[in-house]
Image 1 (cartoon, rainbow, N blue to C red):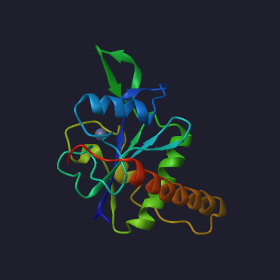
Image 2 (cartoon, rainbow, N blue to C red):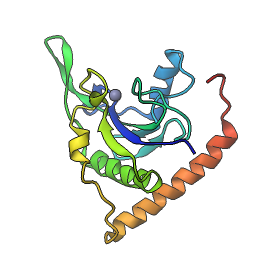
Image 3 (cartoon, rainbow, N blue to C red):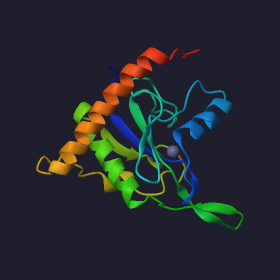
Image 4 (cartoon, helix red, strand yellow):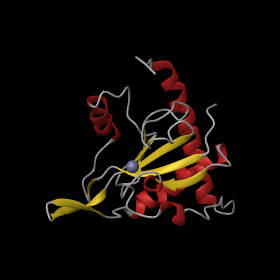
Length: 176
Ligand SMILES: [Zn+2]
């Protein structure tokens, strides 16, 4: 397994309320000449967690930090109107996105116990992910008393392993 010491949160920098899927982001990234989508996970507006790049493959999301990190991108991150000609950064996470990010982070922390949680902006001069991820998730802990959470976690883990099997079978890379 790849050594992972950071879980890095991103936003798609798409307008509030606009639902984009992983396949669309993958198309954008392929158009840039990348071999695959840059992120490992995409969190849709309705809280659906979609797979990007497989977690054991180095991503392309945070310059200088890709080798040992996992990139998680929620859809949104800017206002849905322009101010002074541009879309300003905004924490547009829906309640369902917030819940899914926490579920996913907890699942990943089971696999990568020592990984710390960050926002992209800690490593770049960017607003991404439009909120202070390090602060918000600093005290994220497994809550083993939460039955609903355990069920969700079990389904996420099953889902990850299922995807891993399919991914290993169906993907061959052109380079790197
Ligand atoms: Zn980012």
